[in-house]
Length: 155
Image (cartoon, rainbow, N blue to C red; front, side, top):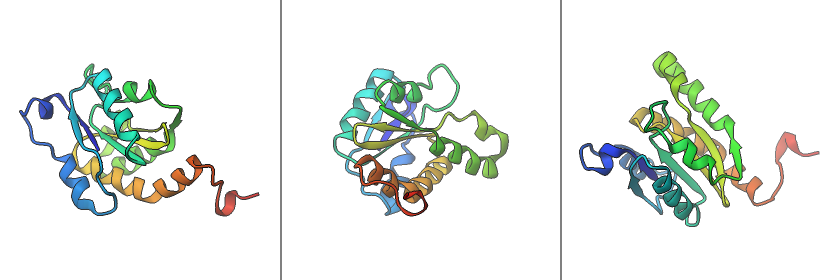
């Protein structure tokens, strides 16, 4: 669990994302850090988290402003992209908030042996991210560990 936010990092705003994830119950939080919107800081935190956790949720920094650099940080350390996660996040968010959801650059990545997911940091978006991860994380991790496809994908 990594929160990327200049204002939360400086103590000007409360971290709303971590309590949502901690109380959700579907994932155990084994790593939690707040970092500023800085590519190097985000990259270092994600690399550290990916050594400790199978799923790394990174909240914030997914918009289009100059300070939104989470996606760039993850791209620089990822071995693969998992674009369907961001596509589904935007689809579900669109149903809730309309066209504003299309400005999100939410995206999934493979970092080391972990699934990393960049989500907008607002509470509703974090909840959507958790719902998506709960549905796909197990299958994705099986794939990453070379256990092959299940169900209709078996040939």
